[in-house]
Image (cartoon, rainbow, N blue to C red; front, top):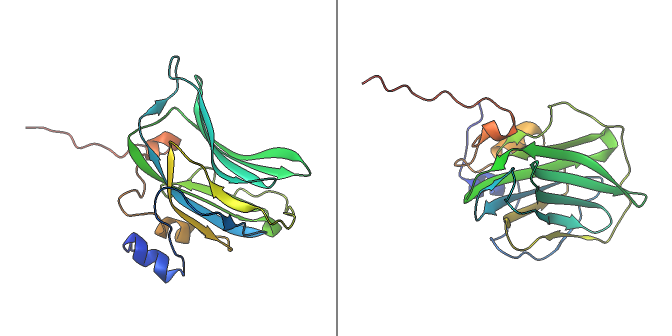
Length: 199
């Protein structure tokens, strides 16, 4: 069992400084291995179905290297992770959700070790792909590109950029206690049983 510490104490123990909410200065892209984590704030609910209006915008952009994006269309609500290799884009993860309730906070963490063929993503500490899924190793060319947080809603806060891959237990420990495991049903985890009132 993982013992949770307050969010800022957990980050300090890992040698990480969290940014403040709102706009962020650009950070250096970590390279062959790294972690990008942030709080996502929605100002309203986003659900699939007709009439909701299409929304597509980058959450995190590293020009010419990778992008983490949010998209709402009639068929689905997506959080996606795309790498650019040799000028072509390759989707790494596309989380296909029926909805993203709001106004609400979520904690997203994306981590990779390209030499080992590992890329993982988490929503509130829950994996967005089957644990243990691996790719063929790939090479990320050196770049001066910066990690840039998108603006507007959904809003990015507490952006963290690390130069190391974050293993699953450590990724879970980084999630603020009030968000850990919340909305598990959105990504296919069973909803916790609700108490039955037998009064």
